[in-house]
Image 1 (tube, one colour):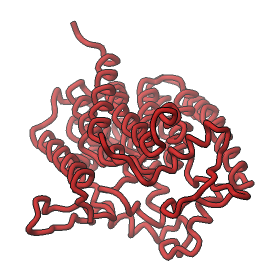
Image 2 (image 1 turned 135 degrees about the vertical axis):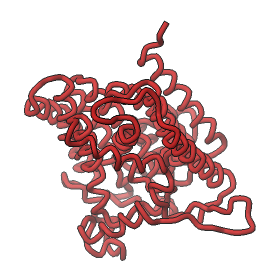
Image 3 (image 1 turned 90 degrees about the vertical axis):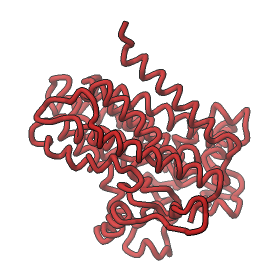
Length: 396
């Protein structure tokens, strides 16, 4: 009897989440902005009552009040754990479960995208253990927890769109995802196109549904800004960057693109002789294609863009989700790899599989040997780095 894709997806989600949680046993974080915010939510507050010196990105937002600058979704996901664990543990547990579970959802989305089961399984394994999502989710500090939370719901949005499901649900899921990572909201028009193509509906109708689904969450975020900063605008980010030398052209500028491209394509690891881990991950990041060599196949997928609207929509979704990051003043700093890539990870994985498996509208039955080797190398790099950083503190 053939096991359904839904059952396979559930098993992948459960197993990957369990591995992520196990990989982080004994590890917490000092940067528990979201864990503390979750505790505040449980006590009816949207602000913290203290600002420890190491949490230097808390901003005053009233008399004796300090607000977390970032969107609140990771804190919401931490809520079930706060009554039972310290805030630093609650945050990282939520991060690990969200990051691991996203692999199962992505598998489901890849099957709807058109990938054969062997390719969808390969994509789920690649996403979970061959990208910076692994380290970011296991580490779980505030910036990383935001990526894992966003990834969970962005993968869901991709899966629903690829199956031609409700455009309203696609918009709602993008809206939820954006409550962790704002840039992903820009992928909405492309996912509306994917949804329209799969459902056979008009693009304008699909786009209207996506917008309608996302609007309540946009309203929630505007209201959250009003509570924090007394303005609907995201004033916290602007205040945070004042006087910072890296933001000399503002928060976003075309002049920052060169920085981002260098980080994506050229940033190498450190080579440290005389140590067991002689390849040391750089504290400021490492090239996306050294971190995940299988993503090189994304460029091969572009040959199908003119032939296949589904591939084209997925490629545009990846570009739009990454667009704000490309114009952003910094590229993440504290990270392994290029963590902003997680904003487009469901689409990048789908495109990577496309580059190897889809040719002139037909999928291969199984990945090529060279693509399998690239996936294995991606797994080795990311598992190695996660162990080296989290257990041996090898991070330069």
